[in-house]
Image (cartoon, rainbow, N blue to C red; front, side, top):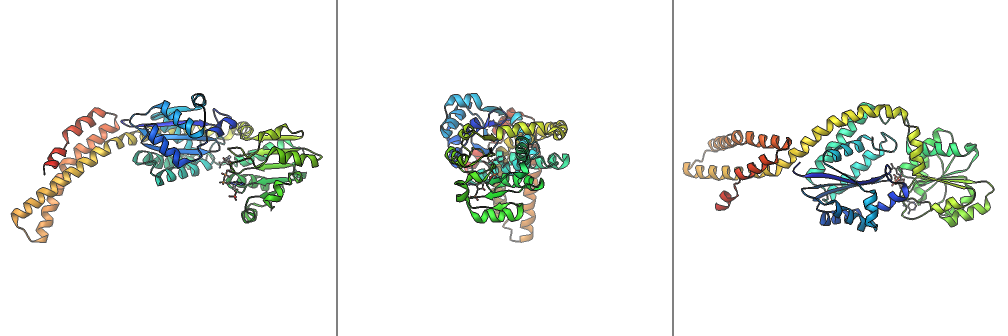
Length: 421
Ligand SMILES: NC(=O)c1ccc[n+]([C@@H]2O[C@H](COP(=O)([O-])OP(=O)(O)OC[C@H]3O[C@@H](n4cnc5c(N)ncnc54)[C@H](OP(=O)(O)O)[C@@H]3O)[C@@H](O)[C@H]2O)c1
């Protein structure tokens, strides 16, 4: 490719949750600005979910070190941390990885739906702030379409395994007689919905709390559970034996002090499952006697044990992805020819229009019908002469022949001629 597509990432696959959360880019708009300004990237898309923080970029030349430096400065990290944890791939491998993402193959719960929505949101917001442009917009649109097709044809997402159901299973495995325990769900977003569905399906009663009481009410109307006031809950964790916490709060909601206080009142233990990234439960609560804390790392382990049915489908999806990557790569390479093709068409159109007007003046023709015929004739002549070399340029670009592009841009250099007019 004349242009490079790069991917820099840190994901749950190579980093535990306490490392992963450190790479969070809190101000995405600023991050786009900085990556473009300091890393040699001229297009960017950032994907940030609980399991991954990824940067896709487009550039003719780029500098890995500068990307690491910019990331480190944005997240407030030592550069060493970026050296140890950031993975880099480019071009074919980057496209391959994006297809794994959209088809759900790189997710913790293979085939889960959330990632597709998250990728759609990422490219939409990158488009809005003009961080992405022709290359990445085309790439993401195509990758989303391919991923959706793969999911539909393989049925990879079927079978009811989700982060929510895994969290409930983890609670069941660690607590005797879960049915007799008081369960609280903190959060009313997507993940809480998955937890609530699973609790409901397995017949567990639970309370739900969220900053806005209205949101808890609406949530409980559709997902089940009893809404409880947020402030009361925060100062009264002693009423609960199991907490599922899934919020995007930028600080610890479940603090060491609050759980210490709760445990003074409680005779039995407490299990806290933090599904958030960044975490919203202070890990120090694990040091309190009788408290068992689990987070996304343990859920990842549990998921691994439960993915056998889906894993059978992975091989055949990998094969589809391998075929799709070459098609996708060809379309990306083809894009490299577009600026030249566009310029040539624009220049030739300018020349055609100029010669057409000149001829009309000489003929002093007033008959609209005849003028139209002459104009259509000039357009048809231009089209039939230019379309073949332009398609050949596109083909050469698709086949990775930048020398043809270079030569063509010299041969079709109309700038001087246009400037002379
Ligand atoms: N989506 C996934 O696939 C997935 C998978 C695993 C883990 N996670 C992690 O799970 C967490 C929740 O994700 P989600 O997708 O469910 O998010 P979401 O749909 O955006 O919901 C966010 C929830 O967090 C609450 N919240 C936000 N700021 C808060 C604050 N300052 N104090 C208290 N509550 C606050 C919101 O409550 P109100 O807006 O009502 O106040 C809402 O209930 C995230 O940390 C995410 O990284 C997500």
